[in-house]
Amino acid sequence: MFEQFRGKTVVITGGGGGIAASLIDILSTSGANIAALDLNIDSLTATDTLLPIKVDITDQHALAHVISNVIARFGHIDYLFNNAGITHMSRFCDTDSALFDAIMAVNFSASVNITRLCLPHLKQSRGQIIAISSVAGFAPLYGRSAYSASKHAMEGFFKSLASEVADDGISVLVVCPSFVKSRPELTAQVNTGVSSPGATKKSTSGQQIAPYAAALKIINAVLSRRSTLYLGRISIIAYWLFTLLPSMYIKVMTKGAKQEFE
Image 1 (cartoon, rainbow, N blue to C red):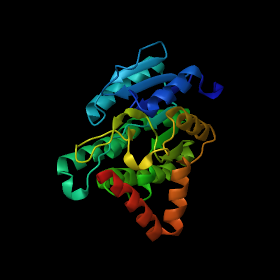
Image 2 (cartoon, one colour):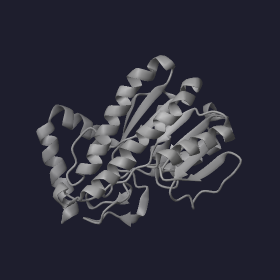
Image 3 (cartoon, rainbow, N blue to C red):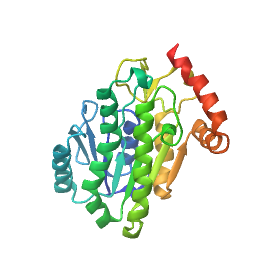
Image 4 (tube, helix red, strand yellow):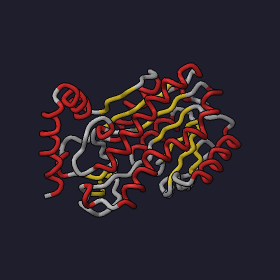
């Protein structure tokens, strides 16, 4: 499908489900070698070119062991997809510190740690880093303070890193999806701890992007070596509205997001 990936090695976190399933499908069909990292890899079947790895990405020592195994298996790393993410539906006053810290650990700290481990190999291959952020990475989001904090931190880190590694031939793509319907079997619930970003939400009916369509747009942005992808109509509208009329954005966003808490 995309010959540019033939023989390349891709590391993807959160590889056991969601949008990763479509990314893996496209990349596998294109001839890439893929290391898919997740706590739950039951949906993945190992092949000569697909290496599912069960790992807690918040464990730095385990991550180091995983990257060593990837190099031993495939010899190089060309692409790193920081795709793993968790969210919540709770106002800050109802979000305990353990939940807040867990979201920061998975969404932000783990992506920093695996990037550090992969960076020497990406320098050798003059590869690419893809960070799956969110609309919440550049704008506020009612009832998702921990999630928004983690994605804002993620964007700040990867956009700064991009300026540092450009001379090494490495490009960084930050993807900001709106709502990807990657877990249609789940419904987002209020004050229930960790939840999936792809779960169905009350206020986004009819506005969610199909995972395969999202994955295709991401792959095309990778091949174009873009720096930012606002994925989906809602993401593009949110970017311009928050940039030009921030108070209007907050009013519209808050009104919609509060419906999820009713």
